Image 1 (cartoon, rainbow, N blue to C red):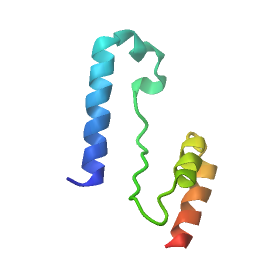
Image 2 (cartoon, helix red, strand yellow; image 1 turned 180 degrees about the vertical axis):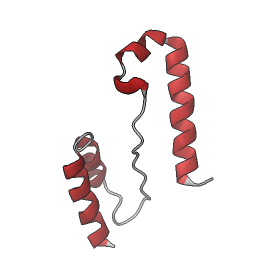
Image 3 (cartoon, helix red, strand yellow; image 1 turned 135 degrees about the vertical axis):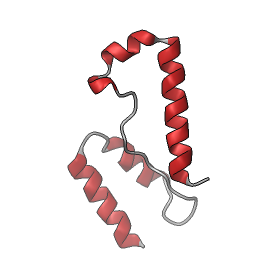
Image 4 (tube, one colour; image 1 turned 90 degrees about the vertical axis):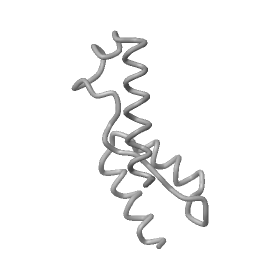
Length: 77
C-alpha cells in the first residue's frame, strides 16, 4: 500500500470510531471535519529527524510556515 492510502485509511477509521463513541464531538468540529487533509510522511534516514517532524507539527494551521519548511526540505534533496 502507498503511504497516501495508509494515511487515508487510518484517518477514516479513527474518525469513524471516535465519532461513534463520542457523537458530541461532531458539534465541536469546524466544518464538521475530524481531520485536516494534510499529513506528514517521512522515511527513516538522513532527513527524517525529530526536528523536521517537530517543525511540521508546530506549523500546523499556519500555511506560510508550512510552505517555508517544505521549501527548505526540498533544498536538502
